[in-house]
Length: 375
Image 1 (cartoon, rainbow, N blue to C red):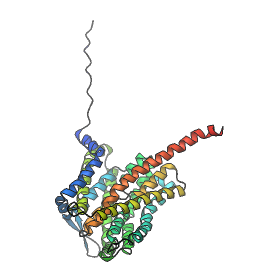
Image 2 (image 1 turned 30 degrees about the horizontal axis):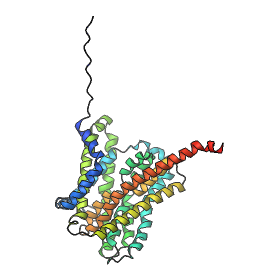
Image 3 (image 1 turned 45 degrees about the vertical axis):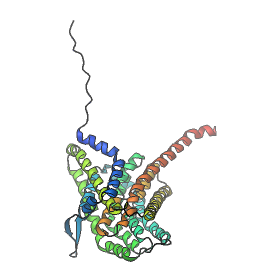
Image 4 (image 1 turned 90 degrees about the horizontal axis):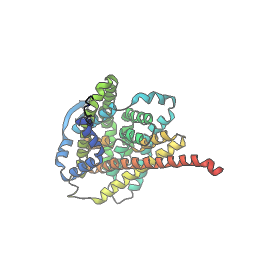
């Protein structure tokens, strides 16, 4: 009788270290972000030094220069890694049905342009020396930014048209050298004092260069690398780039939060903090709601409705924070509504996700049970 060697149970093959660490950080990113905010409130010194670190002076047309800071480089790397992962293969299909793309892109720019003067009128009635111009400036910096790359993640989770979300993100990014100065110019007319002057100056010179150098160039570079690199090589390096991207995001969050929260525990201004959260929440909620109404108004299907709704409510708050830290370093209160919007838009995206899912389930139930009721 032949001897049969016992079969040894095979051990599960564990993924390499870098993907495991990346997956762990992504699952715990909310807590990591909270830790970064706590560190900014308790230990702001390192973050403030990081914000002031200038890497190079980039020459501009007309003989002027703009400073390239370390936070600008971190932001550029985040956008570069996001572009590496953008599935652009479905974009040509949008050309056959461009209405949703046009509505989502236009709404991302026009909604803040309409809402900001309305919020300025309400805030102007508060007993504040400058009519809450610091809060309005922060909201303008958020509203001026293109759609956040994170909208692609939330859109996929909610069952949205992924190609449409990607198209709106790319379209709003490419238009940012025009839309950012436009938004800041409008904001300068509803603010007072040095805020109006700073916004007008940024609209005329700094913001367009910022959009090109820190937003468009990294995105185009990421798309070009994705297009030209062989797929196996790209997939082998994506975990490393993703891990470095998470580290860059945490550092950027910490440095931006230091500008607003540094010393806040020692010199608290609870009224200002509450006002920043309220106005940021109002702008965020109104943007999501108006985006949903616009999508329904053009009779978009559910997938396009999800894409347009999330694109209207999610702006690149990190870019707004970097612009504020670079060009308004003496006005840290401007960062409060920017940081509040950054957190609230993620909460709003999650709420919109659950509401749209419930609506889809209830609609499906009506379709299934409708004939039985009529019978």
